[in-house]
Length: 381
Ligand SMILES: *Cc1c(COP(=O)(O)O)cnc(C)c1O
Image (cartoon, rainbow, N blue to C red; front, side):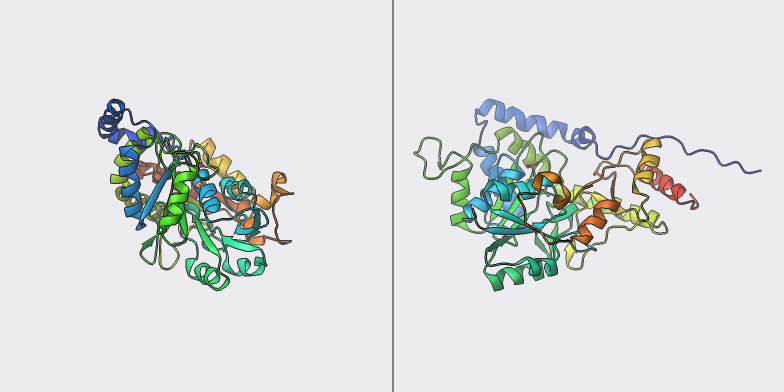
């Protein structure tokens, strides 16, 4: 008689930063020693070197290192002259920081729906939200998938709107062989430790092809001054990239493509092993290179929370990004404009579940996660 044994218990984290950084320890420590001896702790040569390299990687002429991805967004909006009375169209299905940035410059976030295949800003919904006051579009390249830039660029061109790309989840993602971040007026990146290119603390960058815009952002990050000892020429902030972060990020940038290749391999393996389950798997859009910052599946039929519990009981950590679209969060009620229904955003928010994915994730771990998922759906292991 055949007895089916319970699967072996494994602990699979959603991401594991020490595991990702450990292989780079020697390179990282050597670069830190240089900073320690140099006294350039804020800005300085290591920041300049990393700004050049990351901007070049993105295919942009200028890179400006700032304190966070949120600040990269705020400074870009501010430098593009967007402020009170202006409307900025952005998806309701995004991280809080996207909408906060618009609020921080005094502009009005106008929420649009997302496309059901890519989970990014839906151009048809944008069309419906355009008004006399619309000044900019702020698409988000969510989970590492580029937004629908063809249509968005066309709308922006026709209506003379600025485009600020929230590329905080999409380092290295491409659209028609061009890197995201280099497609609009400004591209904003976060180096939060878990991001596809993550530091060992907070950090961010704006990339742009426009020299005038770059100069303004250089002042905004540093109390309105270009250098440390000039008089201010702008109302700025204190939000600069630090020497140690830039040194770490330069090391990690050298390994970024390798990491993205591994992320894509992991996504492939998940897709193969899960193809016969009812889960709706992420698709790569035409003309796009998805970098799988997150592997977000959709769990249909209201089973998301029970599936998440099953995975958790079996030692697999998962995260829901994002459970509540912005327009459903009470905090924003008085701050945003939105249509009556954002049906796709609501549906996706009720189904999405992010499975473990980071470059150090092992094949056995992926197989284990898939085994649990197949078991949940009563499929052969
Ligand atoms: C992480 C993130 C940000 C903000 O980046 P921080 O560095 O944490 O300020 C903005 N938008 C999106 C979509 C993000 O994922």
